[in-house]
Length: 377
Image (cartoon, rainbow, N blue to C red; front, side, top):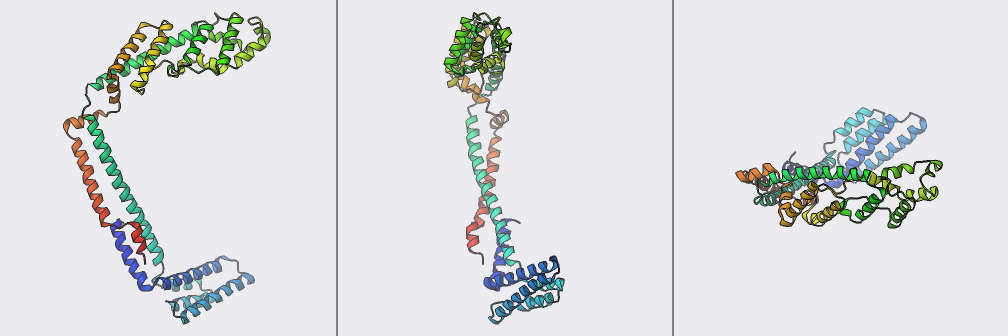
């Protein structure tokens, strides 16, 4: 049922409640509930003498209260209530319920509350939709306005840059993995430790500077400098007797390696760590710092020329401001841009404005739920 129709129903039921008198109606409702509960207890309780006496006493108490209310003229529909009590004494349960059902005002209060709750929900849904449409108008208006200056050729530049970044990421990942596996462990450790101080390079951080220095000293003292990193990790799995052929102090070796094992395994698995990679999600201000460090780092490792060439090209895009304009295109829906070029976006906004006007009129024709609740009879 629509909120406006619910208002009419609430007004109608308010009139019926006022005519009956709320206090008198509540009293009838109270006796109705008590008698029906007694009927259920009679029907659902084992028929022992003690239970029968208890239920009979309850029946007598209700009967006396009904008679008293009748004498005080504070109770309506006494005849139906008394008939229900009379047949209940004879254990004619179905007849007692039928007598109660003849009271026409029963359920008015429950119905009134139900209608009001339904009205509140309907009003809230209407208000929420109105606010949602208003927000959508603001957001779409601002969004379409922001697209006015977007150059359609930026989509081609964006696609090309995405491909170039993907190619660079693949190339730098392969190069770095090869370097880690083939370079001497000492070189790998020194470079990794240096890189870990620059989070933007994406290298795994060392557990602590002290632990890393101990590891470097161990590699130097045991003449393991030419050993590749993966072989160093294999040594950690050797038995003491086998390990003693390669290192002087097996206990010290294990202790130092254990304190660095997570770091070493992360370096050995560098391809999955995203180190030295770029992403279009990174803003230009971030890349302005990151790219020079990438260039310096990769130059130190004698990286392939194509990787360094791409980084320098991207650096120019960043410093010129072109990178941010291209990156912003990734948030643009090409269909929306075409809508603007065709003027079709105006129809979208007009449809929303028409809906907002319709919803506003509906809300003006209604009352605030709090005002409706105050008026409940």
